[in-house]
Image (cartoon, rainbow, N blue to C red; front, side, top):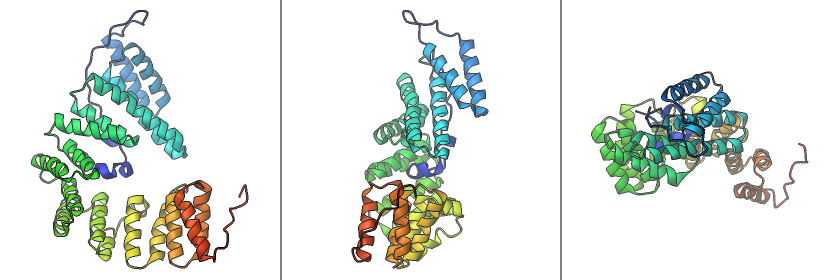
Length: 354
């Protein structure tokens, strides 16, 4: 069972969560003028070759084999799944190169074959769940929601599906439905820590402070090392006006973990509650050091440096954010705040080429 909650799955990665189901489906008959359908042996040979190319990280070769196979056998569900996985891995590669537009296009393309697969095998809960994960990664919220609800409906005995459905319902503030889905997950796996963490978030949304603390501490007792659960505790503690306890929940996380936006947000928010804006700025600056193009973190760092009275440093972060995302409203708001701090002196953009 996957340990990654849906509400943080983007920060934890999806590749390990998407598994082959080995669904079997007869090849579609050839239409008029179409190439002959491949034999079962030819299908197996193509799938085996594609798998070897994937294992060797030769993704373009795997993609070519799968696309050619699907031209002749468009209802071969295993090939559709594999093609989705290949495109997802290609998206991961494009992220490492910093090409966000290509990454977004590849993630959308990765979902497409899964969408086709569930039309062929609509009663496969596993396929719907994989389609959910792909749609989630691609930012297709409505499609993801539909798939995860269907997965949980088709296989209520699989706690992962009910857990992810509950988290999606929670995100839509459907608290009663989310609680019902979590109850289903816990009936199958009573010691699932993320189920208890989700109950804690439901209690927080309802304003039930003691219940939220009880549930999150139960989750921590079941998995004390989990970063996402520690982040959830920090959020609940901060909501409960316990900023020091919120910070303590995140003590011990390494630099890589603290550079994740969800973690940095909790650390910075807790320090802001403690009237320590310079410390809050440091949390966002760590994110920027790990991801030089994260303009949102640069804006947050600038805001906190300005709150600390460090106008020059705030101006530096404004320049960083403005170079990356000059048209964003929050960048303009930081610029206006700095202008007021400087006595309404205009802040000139950096010269071209700098």
